[in-house]
Length: 336
Image (cartoon, rainbow, N blue to C red; front, side):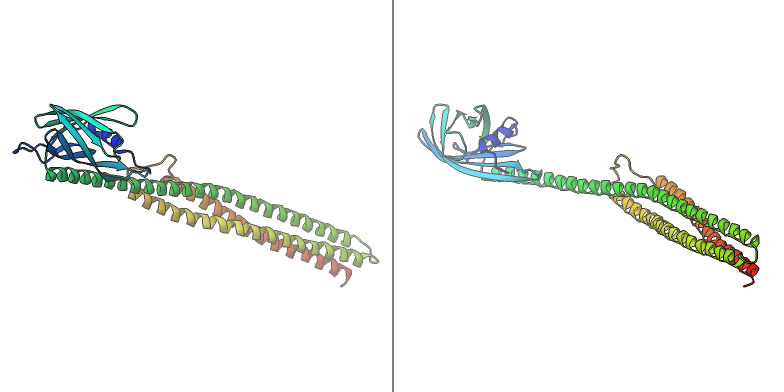
């Protein structure tokens, strides 16, 4: 971040520079100090008749783009004149303005400074020594340290809030995925049912072939019996289709099972993140009740799907046995 000019920095605190340090004891004080919550200016000069020369030391708080502050310091030389109560300081390059003009009323120094935008800022100084200036700088550094501690805590809270948002989003996505994968499993179960229906039709066709065989005369009965065997073989193929559909179903069941485990783990992570920042709760935050309800529904649906799938497998195996029994009766009628 580019540093602000010192004149601009002065303008930030000069208007509030009401807490001024003074020290006395000699006709010429050790220096003049103006200070505020965000800066301090210390002027030291040596006076010979109406001429003065010396330095201006400025310390001010300056924030960077990330919100952290530092105490910046600058020092420039000047020459000037004091004519009665009027004071003019000709500033060396570095503080922006060419001249600082003002008045010296006893030991009270007032200077007017032109800012970069042309506006005028009035600074009020009281007598002070180096130790007073150092104390003012120390106060600034303490304030900056406290501000930076607050910024660090704010950054940490923001990072924790982001982790909560991320964890909340993950759990919400888990819930959506669980619902979708349960639907996928139900669709897969329907595919098994469809394949099983085709196998049932095959068993019915085998039975019809058996009846045809039994009604066929001795010259053609063995050919008819072969047709019954072919029909029974088709049932075996159709049973394989049921198995393929069951394999797809098992894959869907495994996905739902993984989802249930993942939701539990991810919700535990979300709870841990929430514990780190109890004051933050994002919109749409999944609750413990949401998780319990979703898991209960999915588990019940999964149990039903698994049970139904097992029943379909038993039926598929039994229908092959039935079809083969029809084929055996047909060949028995053939005399084979």
